[in-house]
Image 1: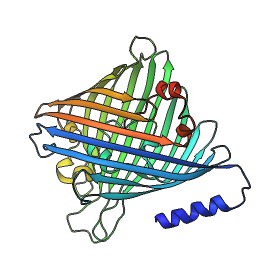
Image 2: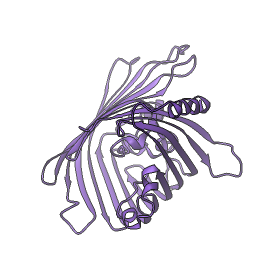
Image 3: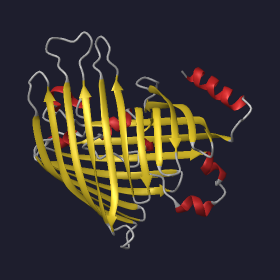
Image 4: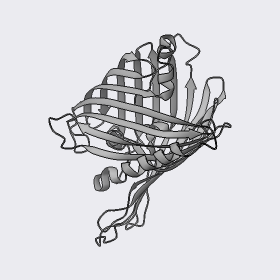
Length: 362
């Protein structure tokens, strides 16, 4: 695939330009060490993730960035002495950017193009490590007062033995008045049958509905950022062989605060276990963190951003998980380095580089 991508880019760059075009490139590299201790059940085992990830991209943009075509790879490599366990994933996508706020992306593209990180009851840390790309289409409407986005992610193709899987996602968040914001998430996950399916294999559905009301005091306190959110989570799941829906619901409260280099994140859930079919299908159907299969669950993250500017985020975190069945204590060290043609042009402007922050991928 990389040979075809190189041929296409070479052709586009050598044809006499009928419209203004510009070569765009980026390098996104990250390292993660996540040591997980304290899990006392099958869904949250003690384990350690240690890996590096390199994601270079090369492409062109035309008409002042309105049309973009980019390609590259994502190289996932565990930190061991040989190359075993590595994954190389393709990146190849077209992106349309309108100046009135509309953006459409199609192909294999980074999840970092989404406006915000998905909450962990929608997309777990573990999946974020090994599935960095969306595989499908995404439409976004982004304004200074908020955004709305719709994405469809084809996670797995149907084969003789492999089950088809896809996810449809709607995210939104809008400022109403002052610090008040209204938004939420809607996610539908579908797990179909394989072509040569066994007699007991049925189609499965998982729907998660999550309206949220937030208060954003980031510009009204001495803190760099402060946001508190509350809402409900409703899940509807079924195995079509049972001909009935499992209806679960609960309350979610989340808060994040940052002062200079120190950040605190808290998430508290109370209600019914969100993923009743997780024991049968795991993350093939339920994409959220399995800790949310408890009636009460609290996650507290304390993060020190040791180095944080426009092109690097080096951070150390401790994470405490407390539920009605188990506890967990994670320690994480991450480093993300990002550089593209725009940052390269401003590399000599030290004040500008220090004035912004690169977000963590994790």
